[in-house]
Image (cartoon, rainbow over all chains, first blue to last red; front, side, top):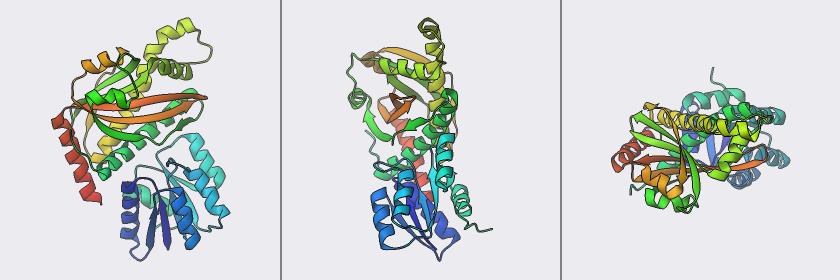
Length: 121
Length: 200
């Protein structure tokens, strides 16, 4: 599996990556600090799973989901955010993507993988 | 001044993000509308330089909810607004049918409630990140000229988070600050460094 983690926090990206690789050492995990880099990476190679932060400088996570799809991305997507308001969760549901609440911990990353259909259990 | 690395500030910003996000979820239920949050920015500044980085003059009138807390770090957390913004915030959180006169009585309580909510959520998120307990005590509202309010506070370094949020088409600028003395700031930094070395 190939995963793209999009988050403006390097700490968040690094922990998400470490937890995924701990559970799935044979997967590859790429990182992007913003939407522009995520779009550029996804244009070069296909990803199976996208973990996307919502509140990022510039383009936000919701818009990025739409832009990735418009660009032909086929992977399963999850929004991974500290913004846990009901209207935000609803917008994720309307877009047809999973929503996982931060903080980034082994438990929340495992929940993210389960939400995109790649649980370990 | 304590020198913070980009990664250390990044880790704390994530914790504040979680705190502000969970407070916004409660606020959103209180006001029956989404609270639109900006990307917060965290800086560590001298208390003397804090006002300028707030974009405030010493004579500007501000309103601050001050929340003392103890536990791993003994300090004060503040949620500050300019007085004008504080009225916008109160207007957003109290019911529309309240008259201005009734509002006067409620404004103070409403601000303390919001301040307590935001600060408690931020302290909880920082405590969770660093695996330490921070216990909040009773918050109070302080009003006055910015220079005077800052002068009253103990502590010489300030960790400052600038956040922009909008509620019901009102744009509200708020500042979350932790006032710490150098010893407490170093203890906080050591805890962040421990977190980073355990997780990265």
